[in-house]
Amino acid sequence: MSATHGFVRVLRSADLAAREGLDSQVREVQVGDEAVLVGRLNDGQAVAFGSSCPHERTDLRDATFVDGKVRCPRHNYMYDPRSGENVIPTQVARRENLWKLHPGYLPTYAVEEHDGWVWVKATPEPPPTSWDPAVEQPPARAAQRAPQAKSEPDLAAACRATVEVPPKRLRVRLGREFELRLPLGVAPVHTWRVEAPAGLLAVVEQRLDPTSPPRQRVRIAARALGEGTVRCSFGRPWDADPEEVRTYVVEIVLD
Ligand code: FES
Image (cartoon, rainbow, N blue to C red; front, side):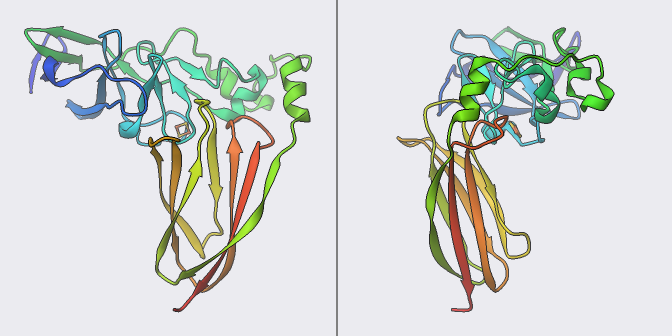
């Protein structure tokens, strides 16, 4: 690792290909004591940003680039890697709901390229100018926010009915793992939220499978004997009601 005028040389430019979409890749590099992710957007610009999602600290090494934005693999929040600004859900959610969604901002690092190398600044850039921490405080601590009239899209969302898929029964051996493959639509911000009864079943991994059609693969471990229900809700993270719910009644047996 070589450093000059506050920038650290991290990898060769030729090793950072421009790739967006489901197969895009980010590379983890070490900048001082920090693990930083670098990638190249389709317009050729190299970008560097923090390695965990501001929403719920998900590891962003599996993040992808969509339309020049970083998409977190967990709830599909999207951040501008040039400024760190949250784009989704901030641009589509109602302002008074942002405190529940905690989009925050993504720390970014200045990047330079010269002599065939990518250089990343050792200290992060300041927060984006648009970031307002007061918006992320619960209403009691943000009394300045005025109530807003319900907009037409919100009314439409309120009227949308949730599709409840009939429950499926599964039989799993104690100590074994099983996998749910939940279909994802093409909308970038829809995701499955998976809830499993603690002590009985444990979600051990969730990942995006970019095959066509893309799926959210959820690996679940059977930890104790008994019966429990896994509830999977599909929708945008900030919607009160999911668009679809699938339930799996899991019986955990000895053999
Ligand atoms: S943890 Fe990244 S979007 Fe929720």
